[in-house]
Image (cartoon, rainbow, N blue to C red; front, side, top):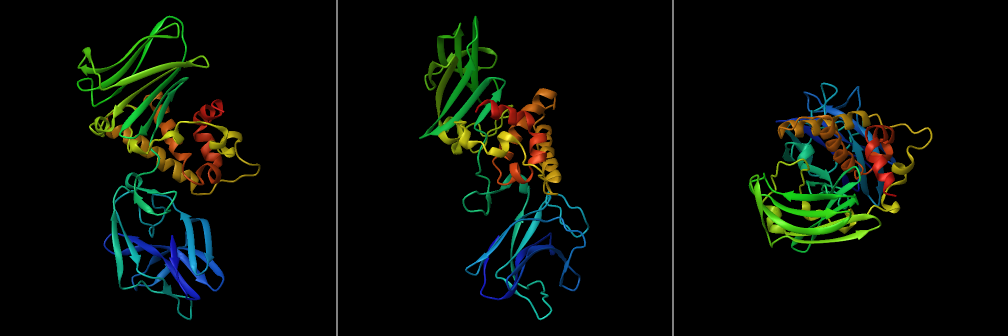
Length: 355
């Protein structure tokens, strides 16, 4: 939250509710003091501090009359004055900061802009550059790893490049990646290998479970590097757009945001907290437990909605993807270090193996 004011004593924040404001979140600025506020609107239209606070400050700063505040609270409500953010809610946004009276009190403003938000987890994310609510365009899932087998994809110009990387194995074997809704209309790249040598590689268009037809639109390539076979191929972006609702094991949204920076795992890109664990005497923020429970619950709900049974191997896959995304959320690997390390242990082991 960012606001500008020339007043000495004021309040800046917003309200959450349904048809009227109920929950109040903001910051009191009184002289040089800044206090995070978790409150509610009374029946008289005044704002009262909650007896139970569940808002955790992350950053409070005032410089050149500009207030910058970052804070977090659980998605679900824990007391009667909190609004449950997991359902549809209305944000009531004051058009300016509110001056405090002589008793350092303030009332709900008469005029506010409103913003209705549903499914806040799916539709809203924190943009790393602007630090503001926006429709999701944050980092997409840009790779999938199972054991020592890795598939990555990145956007290049008007197309998408796919890379398959595996250990060389003796004998005859094959690898494939497909993009589509089902076996009826899937574009696939299939590489046939023998003792680490690429015998043939090509693009195909599936015809149900019958023999697929060659597809010249798919342009494959291959090479051997450090005892691992690497196969890549490209698809035009408009082909990818046809399958934005693909019900496959790895759901990818916003694939155009995948780029080269997502493909390299070097030591500088892996935070020290992920490599070595938590610092001595570290204590998680009290909202971390709720945050992770909500996030992993949403993973389970996504699987249920898409008709997927959460067997052990699938749960590991979905949890891995959740942890990959959580590792990109600012402050989670550090300020929720204990919970992050415990929940995402298998993900971290993979990251460490790549360094």
